[in-house]
Image 1 (cartoon, rainbow, N blue to C red):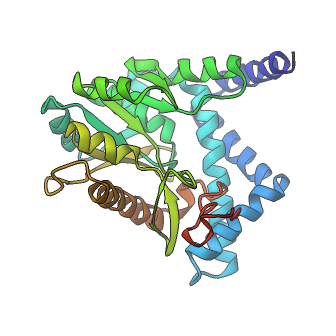
Image 2: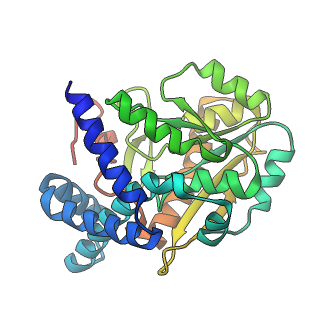
Length: 301
């Protein structure tokens, strides 16, 4: 019953968002993000603590500004996701300005499938949707299942516009491998906290932290190109998309050492973009929950 009530309020808010022009919806998202910064004191604390470790050279005022920007970015992302049914080809062409997409297209044309990496950076939901539209190449996105199945279904419908599909996280690895072997594109955002015991530990902003290794495993097993896409919000509310390829021709087999090295390579690229656009990333997540020094315990920060 609780989930049904939640869904009713979710739908009412969605219909309100859909009635707004895009610019107004973006302003609403930014406002809600700022409100969340002040009301969600626990998440605010996590964000500021994360930033103090990641950017010790910055002043407290600078880190507060980044944290507020991160909350605003999250608010805009969620509202824009609800606004997706209003998107048309004309709107997407104005909203998303692709750069270096030939890497994505060339990788796909090789016929080995492709692993498309993204972080919770900019509007990561629009990243996959816009990429599929401008290249006419659908993406199978690995997603976290929401507790409320009614809300989950609607969100996935929005994600699947323009030919994309979703794969619930935790599904059989065999099915993901089969998608790649059939020449499909798998989309993954592996930048959140890795498993304490099953993950690998790599440097991220100067601390050795548990990190997901699935993307590297998939790429090494199938030899599918590994591409990383970033979507960068501009002052006018439009986005630039940037694509980088993570090369691994020198890593011949799927050994533990090669999985670690390939994961290290894509993690370094993610950190590079976060340093350039720190307010674009999701600092309120407990990314440094499991540090190498606390493998046998838990470090919630």
